[in-house]
Amino acid sequence: MLPRGYMDAQGVVHRSGMMRLATARDELLPLGDMRVRENPAYLSVVLLGRLITRLGSMTEVDARIVEQMFAVDLAFLQRFYEKINTDGSSLASTVCPDCRHEFEIDMGSRLGE
Image (cartoon, rainbow, N blue to C red; front, side, top):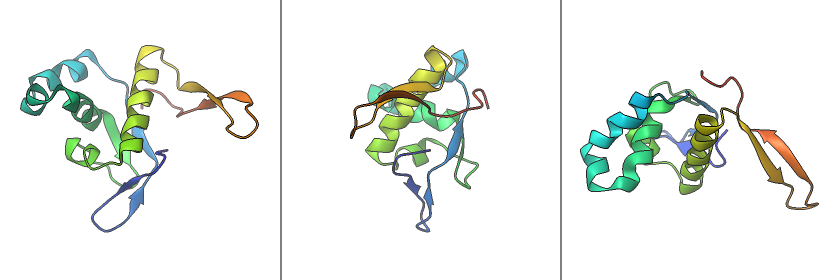
């Protein structure tokens, strides 16, 4: 679930989605992309465009969609990608801003889908 959501051309906001686990190929192919060669920061945009399989009712997501997302959503997806592809868990520690209680949340279940 994206914090803000992607707004499409019709004004529909898409917040829920699916991201699959990355393969070595997913991480290597974007390195040959001209956009990434010209601007290495674009790597995460291309990579996420390959891995997001659904966003709201949209079943075709690519780098063009990812580059139009709000910065807060891109940052969320980058952290989520790192979390599920390094330790294989979608659990993240967080702190309640009001009471300062520490707890874990599941950022997304059904890893690998």
